[in-house]
Image 1 (cartoon, rainbow, N blue to C red):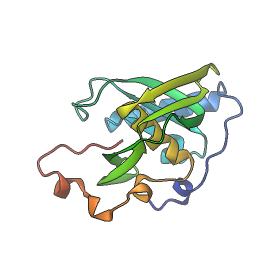
Image 2 (image 1 turned 120 degrees about the vertical axis):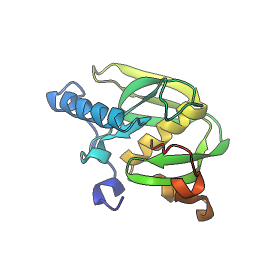
Image 3 (image 1 turned 135 degrees about the vertical axis):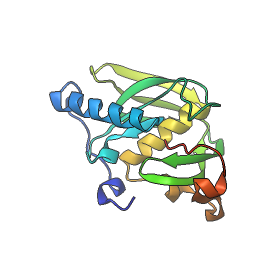
Image 4 (image 1 turned 90 degrees about the vertical axis):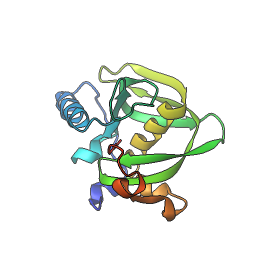
Length: 169
């Protein structure tokens, strides 16, 4: 947090099959797995490109979370399917040790391409929709604390949730 790259809009990817994209995806996946994260955006590792990865299966840091298929999403576009929002606790690898209660749309459609340039078009809800919104926010220069409505619901994980394992997205 505080890095200017995290506060600006990332650049569109012209060729999702370019060798540099493959290398970046390997670095992103290694970083996400090392932190047991649910997702990661390219700007979080210093690259201003519109690329996110996400996915949750049997992650011990998300024991209650439903499965989210591993996805590489390049040049994403989000469309809200309705105006319903829900607040939920979020953390972030770029804001370590902190948690905040963040409002997110409950249902959305996301489109983009994968690492092979194949189209992705999914309509999702719940936790899956929250993870996608969190990661795509990074591509638009938005960190989750900027979305918190009441800063009384923002603080250190160990203070807010004593005895519970730390979970960053």
